[in-house]
Amino acid sequence: MLSKKQARAFFLGGTVVTFLIFIGLTVYSFGKPQDQSNYEAITESVVRGKELWETNNCMGCHTLLGEGAYYAPELTKVIDRRGKGYIKAVLMTPVDWAPNGRKMVAYGFSQEEAEDLIAFFDWIDDVDLNGFDTVVSPLAKDKN
Amino acid sequence: MKYKSQKVAYWFFALSMLLFGLQIIYGFIMGFAHAGFDVLHDVIPFNTARAVHTNLLVVWLLSGFMGAAYYIIPEEAQRELVSVKLAYVQLISLAVVGVISIIGFHFNYWEGRKFLEIPRPLDYLVVVNVLLFLGLILTTLFKGKRRTTTALVLSMGLLFAALLYLPGMLPFDSQVMDSFFRWWVVHLWVEGVWELIMGGILSFLLIKLTGVDREVIEKWLYVIVGLTFLSGVLGTGHHYYYIGVNKIWLIVGGIFSALEPLAFLAMALFAVNMYRKGEKKHPNKLALFWTLGAAIVSFIGAGLLGFAHTLPQTNLYTHGTLVTAMHGHLAFWGAYAMIVLAIISYSLPNMTGRKLYESTRGRMAFWMSNIGMIGMTVAFGVAGVVQVYLERRMKMEFMEVQKEVEVHFVVLIICATLFLTGITLYMIDFYKHGKPTDEALEATSN
Image (cartoon, each protein chain N blue to C red):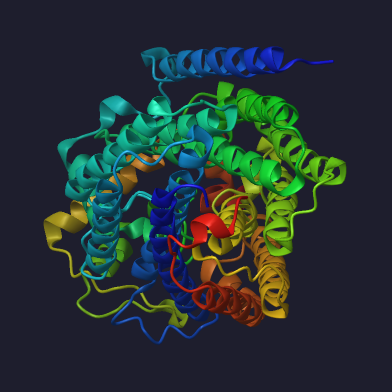
């Protein structure tokens, strides 16, 4: 029968080994040849867009890369779906946007801010999502 | 209660109760918004309610864990806490950070990263607060007469939880990397080190409630936390399937996260077996209910419902839908909320000297909150599955689908009302115990 000492060795050994593998895989994932995120394509505008995305907690309603809340639409591939003009209008409107009755806060972004957010979405759209984009993209929807 | 300084736990538990109540209220705001009644939109928009709801959960659970540690560590180490005054300073600063964050969320002051919305300047305060807490706990432990496995596992869980907060503070330009390291905090907390905390509390409660030999319980504790890390660490990969990182995570995450239910199954079997084996029948039946309940419901909520959408083939469709909310609610309730309620139920009579071990109110609190939460989980599940089929398979528009699932949120609200009634009864029980007193020292020896 298993002794307490063996049980402790199992816990400590297992933990150390899996953590080391985990860190190894993390390093591997972010190596340049494995990059699926188009890291090089991140411009200053994309970074400003990400900043706006965070400071306004857009993830508190929307999802992006499938992450966030489930109250408002997934925004991966949103440019394919709606086009830049529509998105700009939503971002800049001074009154609550309320399609189908569900309201979005009127952020009233400036022209530059709206463009930064669109640059951010544009960058997201080019990330290789291992097939998730085919589930949320309207272009893929047409194909099926 | 064996040591006077254990009383400080009471105030952490009281803070927990207060924040838990507030969390439920914000949950209702979101439930109503989903059902089509977003009447508070101008004052509390959905993203505010959401940030408050999830952050209050984290803060009240942490406050509960801290209270548990302040109660358990002196008893395990067989000495008074090194400084009660500093423990109160820590409590007040925790409450202050919590309150400022929550108020800030109402004024667009946040970080906007799921579960880690607390703004950066306050993050540093959290770090100081947790360091103070750890300092008090670890010094007490190492100055104590004995270092038990239960105390070590609990302290290790708390220490790693603090360390793992740090990757969440790293700044990244890339949303992909941001998300990747955010899961280092969130996943490795809830499916890693928090399970150490849960295991430590569970082990303490089982030793006290069943009378089974400490050596036996602690041996299995090692096995369980071993299984947790063995599956949970690489299981983080299930968050990496579709966020823009290498396909290797589909394999690694798929295999290891499929093993995650084993740790929870082991925990449930362990708790039930120890209860059966136990010869001592502790009179505090309510604490036993919550303890065994936590072990069993966490297996269903975290283990089984997690497994339901953890394989990459399924997750491709369920990723970013209400299916996640289904799993999240029962998992957090079973694994963490219930274990905090268990340690409160156990320790409260010992700290106050009022042995309200058995009451209809207490039992009603247990059953109503559990049945309510299971009902909520089913409502989320049905809404989630409908969303997956209509939106991801039938290609319907997001908002059209949301209209279709509104009715399930009405069901959710009804079940949540039952849940709230249960929790209210629990809180009344808490209040009826009165304040902790030194007179309780002699009154109880357990």
